[in-house]
Length: 277
Image: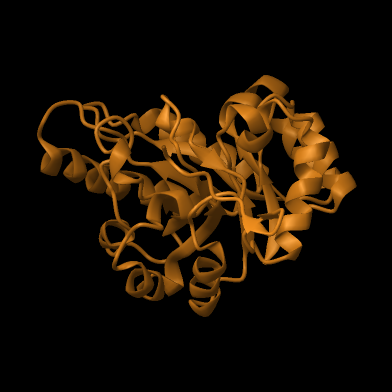
């Protein structure tokens, strides 16, 4: 799989800086975020990416459907932005709980997809539902497993509604092997990072660089490849220490790790696996 650098991994770099870093390090894909794209300008970003010969592996993000307004207008704009950028997919984060009715919140995700799928199809954009680790169910993602995401995608054509396999969110799932196999025609994005412990106070920032934590990324990548996915492997890391590093340093590090197939990083002859006290 070709390597893609998600913009969140080098959060403090601007759109031009991210594009420049990718081009200089031979990273062929870039995952963009809507806010910095808007800051730089949608048309300017599209031109910049194309001029650099990069592919937009994903645009983050749409979704957050579980509020009573379902944010449909904002999601239509996100679809149009993804089309303008030529993004492989628009990542959809389902949204958290506005109340205590979890089944109703999941129902609003399904309802929103039914409204938005025709617009996405007409725009030539593939929607990608991202199941989110259960620790984020209340505030971020009421869809917790790949199987649940596939159930939501099932009423729609695979080329219109797919799913995201994000290592951080799915690695723990005992049904993962079967779910990845079942997702074969619908894998729209494969994102990697690692689960590191001890977790920080803000669990969202507990992602490590691939190879630094507890996830069997070698095995997961094998499952995704066996399912027939041959798109980009996109590195998406939220981590204050990583953000403090120069973007060039992070990109060079990722290129080295990608070349090993995400084998665990070895330090002094021992796997570098942080251990909780």
